[in-house]
Length: 428
Image (cartoon, rainbow, N blue to C red; front, side):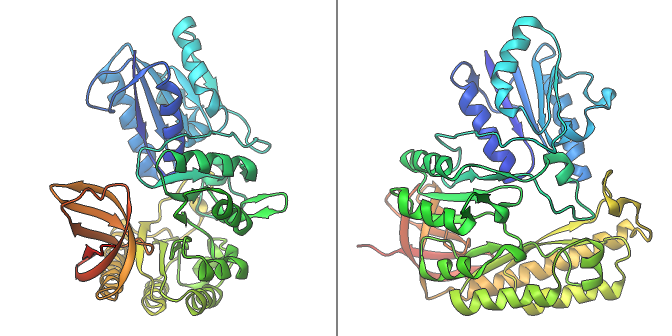
């Protein structure tokens, strides 16, 4: 029998999709989603935006069209939030929310045997952490999921309801999984979670875990943090970045708004002054570092003046690039009931402005590396042209007669072309 996985959403979903593939491959044959009919389809769902929910529904229907007799499994956040809407899932056979994911392989076997529909959706307030140990990842740079859930309850965000409360992987287990991934050839790892910076296992916080991984995982050449809140960047973490080259010089720190009034309405636990103070502290100790961010525009009540505050704050704070999202109301959230919802055309214009600013900031940041050297992990290559990323997560392109794929090399950056660097490998 054949299985196929459609993965939607975040890095955590990507990690979990890799685990599903790993487990199911022991018994079934994997085929790419959408290319051919499969006997089992797994839709790894997302609900963080309305677009993600719509995409989940589209993929469910697509799977059924590919094989009307297939076992259709929908897993994750969209199920957790919408499972009681029977009309959405009437054509699906197995529904699993944000718990019991580790049981998916046996639930598929049970359904094939009994043909009885399965729905597994729990109250997530006391949900345990599900260990999903990976041996290999489907990319050169492997993710390592160390945390799940969120306790922050920002006024616009559905994730605490969809993923449940914060919970973490045991530190010993994190070291064990990291070691296995590195042995499989993944010499760069990305620590990921829903709220990665809140990692805690007894006496081990995120910085202590990173130190353990660097000390105990043989062959680990670079470690990244997928995303971290500004309130979780400690002096200890900054000092570690400054002293340890294997910690990537890139932090993704969600801002969401550069206007203090909007931040307060969003229930974000910092001011723009605190945010900027943290950036300055990181740069003063670490030196050159890429700092990217998330921004939401068109939040309820965001005036043109408020948006201009955000625009100027970002421009002056020197972010390297932005992920920009138009605000979209989500059920269960405080912001969905707020007055002064913003017109869609206005949101679109603001997204376009910040997207243009992001491109300008990134081009300027990339240009600053010309004439310098850096260590690049090459992920792919075609006809002698290889592409990878340096520590600051800038895309680098190199021409070479030898195979550079999945390896680290020191590169001198000769020029830049928009959003990527062009260089040559330094031999020896």
